[in-house]
Length: 408
Image (tube, rainbow, N blue to C red; front, side):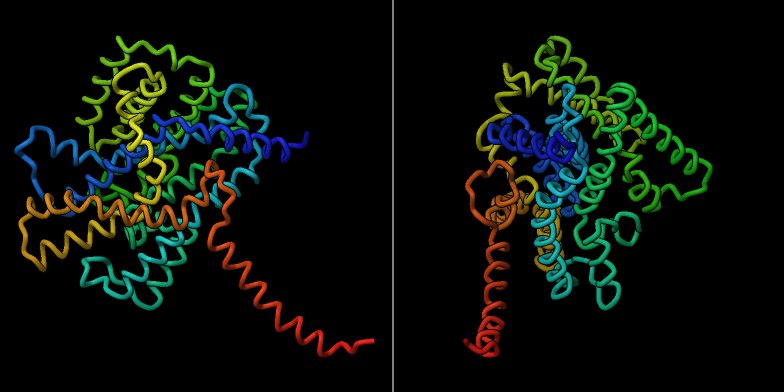
């Protein structure tokens, strides 16, 4: 069997397996998305939740929900090829399926964001772009290159930065698969993690020697969140997929997993903003994933709760739409309505169902057609529209041909 056919077979196997989705994994996706949403509500409201001990620390750490997404990406994308099945991997098939899965919903949300920014950006507290800057932002966001520039990293929709990072990781998966085929997973994972560590050390040296301003966007966001700075979390997920395929994660002992996880959580929270916090959180989330996949404990039962798992299936849509809505509402409540920071926070929490409803609209109109597990045979509306447009465009040509060509 050719590599391309083998890749297609593997992708079909993954699609069949996804019909029996691991509800715990979907639940973790929901947790990650909600944590990021709460982080943005906390950040844009500016509230201090001192009444509940640890609440501010928890909400401030919500951006590390991205770490959980990266671990889950590595796990889910490598799982069909774990256990000596990586010979089935085909780069072209993989990248085409990633484009079909992620780009339609992303481009729809990008169009909505651009429209909001152009029409009412300043009145909603969003960044405003006109003329060539707007065109530049649109082009870099369409090509997922906006995170390469400080001016584009948080532009339009601040949550988009992690999507560009995900695409960098996708583009390196073929390289990682090549390394695994040649040297094995352990050596390949160790090499990628070493690159991550060395890159972070380099950034630390540049900042400590004042070669780069410590509080600059370049030092705090742009450079740390490029591929070499976040590679380890994705690779952790791949390792977890291999261990799960081998049955190792199912044999995890909660008696020691619990204390190890708590120790890692403590270290991670204390190191928020540190060079190593994302890698520590990655370790926490691998252990959490193992506990959830074990499925015989209270944590797994909670995370696999059906409503949470259902929310997890639309977590991508929620991630795409939530930040501009939170940012705009926070601006309106604080600036126009004059609400206090804490009141704004409470009102935004109360409006979570509205944010979820907007995400659901994007999910049912676009994203659900890109899920490999939908299995309903329905054609996406954009394909139906394109097909109808093609038929409509052909009719005048057929009529002209019938007139021009004489009958015999």
